[in-house]
Length: 404
Ligand SMILES: NC(=O)c1ccc[n+]([C@@H]2O[C@H](COP(=O)([O-])OP(=O)(O)OC[C@H]3O[C@@H](n4cnc5c(N)ncnc54)[C@H](O)[C@@H]3O)[C@@H](O)[C@H]2O)c1
Image (tube, rainbow, N blue to C red; front, side, top):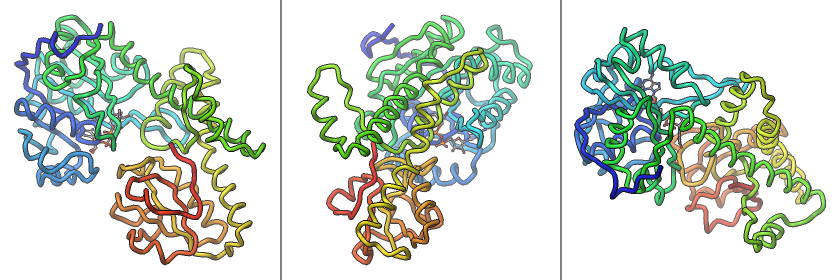
């Protein structure tokens, strides 16, 4: 059921603590902090210290917005005790075998369990496989707190849908799914999020439905991009321009104009593995999901090889100094997690090329490359655009790697 902003009861009496102040947790804490005092806990002392100085190194939240929010920040988990409504937004990556790695999530559960009071509601925002919250998180909360689930504490799940770098779809403007272990806590969770979400709330009938909804949103996107990547490979072989094909096909009312691209980051390239792991646990072989992942994971190698061929035809010498424009996983963000540009650079370096990078969003040497300033671009003989940052808009590169 979708509750419009007008229909939501938004009176909240709960004291809120956000656990994990990253891409997801900080904007949420800042939005809630405009309405009431909000406690924020992050295990990283460096993160707490920069936020106390009103600085977000992820480049998503302005100093002004952080300053305006009534935040009480600490890297000591004791701060969680101040709250009776705890939101958990810690990373849920995959390991080197592409299996869900919920170590940080379970660690957060232990810290929350050790510090939560009877009557607390814990809402998870981290992306997980369906079933994770009640099967894996709740027992740890119960064990560490010595409290009984439902009787002494409640749990909910509200997946995050923000899109870092997107200044239009900010947290308040995205319909938010909320779910809970019972109706009483669902009402409270709805009231808390109702304070800040203007786009409306969708009350899912259960926690597992909300978990599954989030994971299929990203899995569907991954598969759609994988299909376009495969189509691009076919069109490349046939020397057909894929952009012209998409432009033509898009004139049909129900064609979905996805584009091929390098899929990196912390969500689209990761979340399908969470669903695949759960499918396997249930005895189902997730063929389509894993085929899509395989295609998208190999796309950087495919595109690097095309680039090498192109440079050969253009007579770029094997030891030439190349400049890559952009190293983040997508345009206009500072996030380099699982960026496929790193794979492309690795292949170029193996071939003997000297590769430098120009990544103005990140302030260090990226992927063991010298990170040069945009003014230095003209010093390079061959320039490759790998990320379509707005600030690169007017720069004509010698080659462009496809992107989303
Ligand atoms: N980044 C996105 O665009 C996005 C969008 C939707 C959902 N998500 C999901 O949200 C979750 C968080 O992702 P993120 O991008 O915000 O991660 P992030 O790495 O930006 O931030 C996570 C923060 O949690 C902290 N942390 C780690 N372990 C902790 C612990 N035990 N206790 C307290 N703090 C801890 C880290 O220090 C870090 O500051 C993930 O499950 C992700 O899949 C992310």
